[in-house]
Length: 180
Image (cartoon, rainbow, N blue to C red; front, side, top):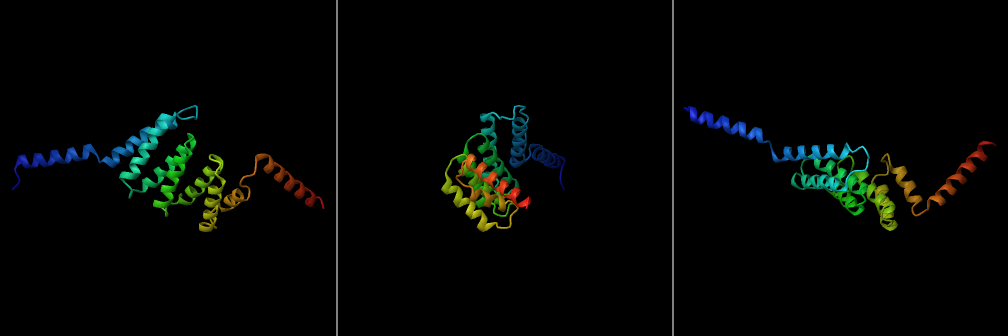
């Protein structure tokens, strides 16, 4: 038979366990608070130190809890924020980890594309961008952004002036065909 001391000890232990919460839930709460602080900035220009702290939390969570479905989303967000604070290599790294470790995640194809986008637009490394874009089109030819990736590949390395001239020529051609 269980005595009062055993019952009290068991009850106290359960209260203690449930009040403390798991390390995973504590980390999620820390991330939520850091996100609130970063996303409520009215200047829409996050503080780089705060952004790096949040990225660090995302990274730590993904490493500690790789089986959690939130890990993939946190890696995606880490990539977005890294690219947004002008840390393109870190952005590529987070997107690559997401793509390789969570291939079934719905944003994995976008993470692959964004690697190419960063190589092209932030780093000017057109060969790497081309390779990523080609890989995307081979792997995801029916994806909703496949046509955008194809356009990016076709226009890789063209200056804004060249693109404007090309679009103007296409518009003039359409206008002349519609007047016939």
